[in-house]
Image (tube, rainbow, N blue to C red):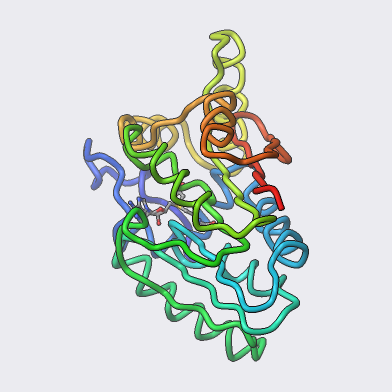
Amino acid sequence: MAKDRIYAANETGDEPFRFNADVAQVFPDMLRRSIPGYAASLEAIGSLAARYVTAGTNCYDLGCSLGAATIAMRQGIRVPDCRIFAVDNAPAMIERCEQLIATDSQAHRSRTPVEVLLGDLRDVTIANATMVVMNYTLQFLDLAGRDALIQKIFDGLRPGGLFLLSEKVVDTDPHMETLLVDLHHEHKRRNAYSELEISRKRAALENVLIPETVAAHRERLERAGFAHSGVWLRYFNFVSIVAIKSQ
Ligand code: GEK
């Protein structure tokens, strides 16, 4: 697995973070070392797919990157005639995602087909869905469009369908916010990122990754119509929420 050294070299300058070919190349290593709880989120996606995906329905991985959540979902699905749509607007991600999904299809002789789509996830029609995943992706979208997107996901889910939303969050209490950011940076140092890499990445994500509070996410889910929602994973300032549409 190629190691993430993007912010160790001076080449990136002060540019904002982008999902380009350099990032796609080191992406699995980047997420594993940067997002506390990332591996647990993938494991749960598989378990939830086994419980919530019903025969003949669609599943969506919005902001799929290299398809890790798609592969987890596909491995969890226990029923026939389903289809997974994996969507990302970064060409470098989609190119590698297609290769990795093809390799996975051969290795596991999976029955569930995957359509890998290059495009803005806000333009994708969601229909006949029993599971929709946004694993650390909503945070990269404009705040103004988030309500409409969550509403579209709710409307496209069948009764009893599940939406999994993982996000970096902020705390309203400044003391807690400082502590959680600090613990996250310590986690990154333990995973062999230097102070310089941590501070450069933080600067590059400024105004690119826009986190909200857990309360703001849950209120939006409720406004959209989700009858049930709850945080099932929290590790420092990273959370994963499940929301379920009533039967
Ligand atoms: C995983 N879910 O491994 N339309 C489509 N894709 C988008 C958009 C958009 N408007 N905006 C951002 N993206 C993955 C990890 S990464 C999380 C998701 C991270 C895509 C972007 O190109 C990138 O691939 C992904 O969302 C976010 O489980 O890098 O922290």
